[in-house]
Amino acid sequence: MRALLTVAIFALAGCPAKSSTIQTRRPHGPPPKQIAQEPGEPTVTWDKVKSPDDVPATPPPPGSYRVHMIDVGTGLAILVQGHDWTMLYDGGSGDPAEKPLRVVSYVAAVLGPSGDSLCVDEGQPAPTGRKKLDHVVLSHPHMDHGSALDLVVHCFDVGDVWDSGRINEAVFYADFLEAVAKSTTARYHTAGDVPRDHTVGVKGREIKIPNWERFSEGDTIMLDTSARFTILHADAKKKPDPNQNSVVLAVNLGTTRLLLTGDAESGDRESPDSEVGDVEEFLIENHAEEIRADILQVGHHGSKTSSRRGFLEVVKPKLALVSAGPKKYATVVLPDAEIIDELRRIGAQVLRTDEHDGGCPLPRRIGPNKGPGGCDSFIITIAPAAQR
Picture 1 (cartoon, helix red, strand yellow):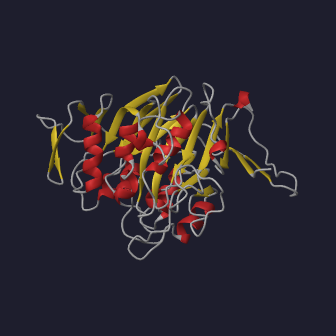
Picture 2 (tube, helix red, strand yellow; picture 1 turned 90 degrees about the vertical axis):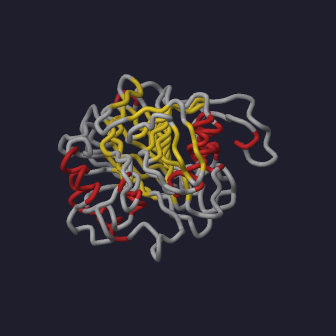
């Protein structure tokens, strides 16, 4: 029997925390532990993806949602799925052995094969059609967040592309923008002014993106009748570090809220009890109610640059998603133990993608069997109380 963890969490972001139910099932283990739960609350369940067969072949029913934390090694990729829409928040890895096809293969496992021969493993038949991916968000232009997005845009009919607009003179970023420019379906959105000629220069390339619009902090995009995302932070100005440009989204999935932070930080590497600063301070000062969330994508892969105690105590997550891998950031392999301890101190259950970076025991991964990724992906399912 596959291990199954279930947490029923309070539903309405911004409301005081309510009691929860935690159930743990293991073969030959003790009976499930239970804590009294409030009636009428939605249920959030999660499990690891141990093979391609673990990815549901059909979308969730109306009113239910899935959040896929894709193990890309040292990077971030979060796929959010409703009954008739999908949104990919970041898609990249900093590991040399981790290939962009990992993200494409996972999205194809959810939506179905799409694109051409570049979109499948070598020797596999090319897809015969194309699938729609409604939203693609690049939180900020770092390789470990965007290295696969050019291939994603090439392989799927992407609807809306959201990018801070902060230029990074990097090949992967130029490739991403060229893919957007070539797409016949993509609408490109940035937080900065749109050039009159719709042209941007990156790595010596002049890239003309005809379908280009500006978005702003506070904009809300409806995903379905009970789901939406709101932009809480976006800055196109050239900051000292692109992490400071992270596009932060509050994603309401029914009455459950997911907070996507990218690499939003508080400052230098310091103890979690240090003063809140930078983007985390901005979010508290301007969006304290909106950042109250049930599920948190932990900033900067669990680094001590982020997740200050003051910030986490405003967010109050019940579930914390930590996407990290084996590659060092300077001299440090993330996540920092102090951040994991702090998340647990505030009562969050922590899911992390780095548990098997030393060696993956799975016989089949989604995407290539090489590289550190593909071993510790998770699917989080949100269902209304009536569907328990």
